[in-house]
Length: 97
Image 1 (cartoon, rainbow, N blue to C red):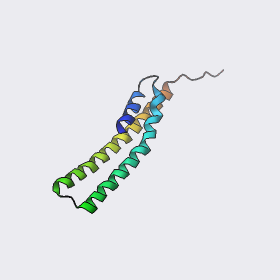
Image 2: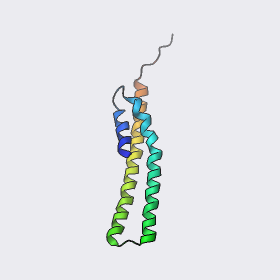
Image 3: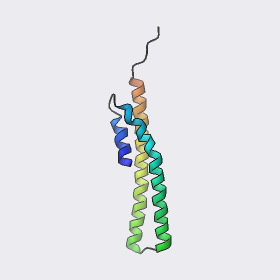
Image 4: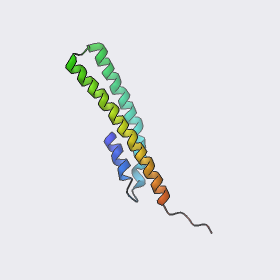
C-alpha cells in the first residue's frame, strides 16, 4: 500500500502526470487502518502468548517496520501535495480581457 502511495506521488512530479496525485492521499486512511490492526495484533501476541526473546524481537521489529512505513506514507502524501502545487503553478491560466 505504501509503495503504491509513493509511486502515485512520485509519478505526479512529471509534467502532465498529475492525475494520480489524489490517489496518493486516498491511500493514507488505508495505511493508518492497517497500522492500527497490526499494532493490535502485536499487542495481543505479547499479552496472550508471552513470547520468548526471539519471538519478542520479531514482534518488536514488526512494530518498528510498520511505524517506518507509515512515515514513508506520510512523506508520499507530502510529495503529492507539493507536486499538486507545482502543477497548479505551471498550468496555463486564462487571460483576462
